[in-house]
Image 1 (cartoon, one colour):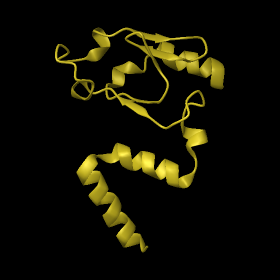
Image 2 (cartoon, one colour; image 1 turned 180 degrees about the vertical axis):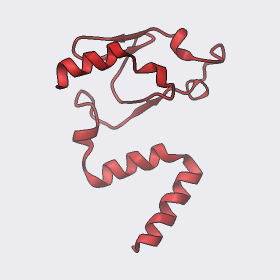
Image 3 (tube, one colour; image 1 turned 90 degrees about the vertical axis):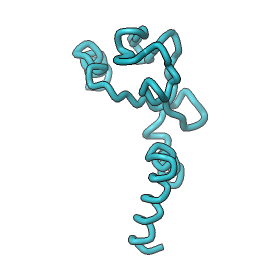
Length: 109
């Protein structure tokens, strides 16, 4: 396919279902899921932390103040007592605290 057709197809898919299924599709096509996903799971998935995407009726503003957030020493992320094993897409910049950055720095750097 030409580059123009690829761009038009990507735009059409994105307009219909948002960018996330498109990202997952490209990860699968490029066969690079091993470098962008959690090796503890067998398939690509993600959690989108917009209130309406989680169907949280009682949370009207920030979920950060209403749901427990835990990060283990092994960098396992637990949100509201649920272990997150896929791509975790947060939309609130306050989610990444200095403590979270420090925990990753200790392991990664």
